[in-house]
Image (tube, rainbow over all chains, first blue to last red):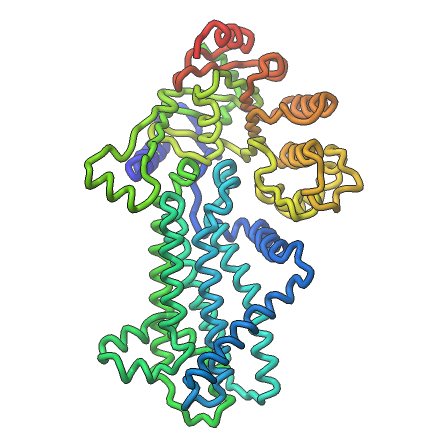
Length: 304
Length: 248
């Protein structure tokens, strides 16, 4: 595949020499694009794809969008009762329900966007096989759709916070926005990588499920990061804190949970530095994901 | 041999070859086991070989051949869905494919939403779709059902709407693959008229069909492909005759 692409590039280069008879101005090579940058050129289609995804999600259900509120509320209820009441994990964490919920919604956002993006190419098989579009559109649309479904959860959280009394600083709120950016970019980078692999090997989506299981339990959602710090050797703990998802969860804690407490709880050191590292890490991952996606893209139509 | 007119070409196909690698493994496990047993992981199939075609602007070309000859593969190469292994393909202008229309239709969306979605998939912008929306609905004869969910449509209605969207896209090169076998006789007539209109407007056409009567009506030039190789390129009547003489 790679040699073919190079060969094509060379021939195109050659025709710009004066000798050949063809005037090739205005010609383009079908099926060649600029990858994820082309998504911006197709933003109207992207918008329609996102609308399609959100409109049809609860199609045929009576409660419709209410489910987007009910499901996280139920998840929260279970975790709260099991972790907080039965296992008593809330010992030492003030306002544990808010701690729990503000973390859960970050992990939910990551899980949904990552797993949807992984399956997006296979799910849009009919189109990928028949019409040329920048294929990145599908994972990108799925990540946005996941974000749309994250909003009701955020609304629930904010409603609760309104009752508790929440006075965040501007810095804390920008931290939360940065966290959302980190999670979405992280999920898209991974989604491009595994989504492209998934075309040839459906094992990828199963592997992703396991990754998501790890993600749910390794992020400091159900417990405090101090528990991890006390158990792990320092180098492993540093690695733990370098996980972009951990950083995003902690940024959410800082924005939504911490201001509701008496602000005496311990917070991770250098959280903004970690956030900076996370931004770089997810950006690199995105480049790698796009690179692999582009490499494998040529085979999508024939492998599906 | 091919009579390319003075007009600039719209499609350039230079010595194109495409082979498919058929993998016999679908999972990491199978891949690993075959690798351990040193079994052949893949086999190769030459779908197209040494195809050289130039289509001038405004020309309508029929691509003929029996099943498995590589016609659809060539069309997919031109549309960019597949990439050639060797040679090069260049197109000029907007390429639109009437390739199994309705691929982007979503059953739970209304006809209206589907028109917008599919026209956008075919590369149209919002103002372009707005401008043509009424034409599309009129041509499809869907009428008042345009706001009904597509899953409630009859298969005929579905295909008419899908075809109508595809034929109304802004295009310079139209690729047609077997979709003219849709709808009832009056609708088919209407489609042919529409396609003839496009030809008169100077659009370039590339038609794949088994309906020899129809292609000789719509096209002036015919290309016959047999087992991935081009065996004839010339006037459409002679192409039809060549196809009839050849074997699969």
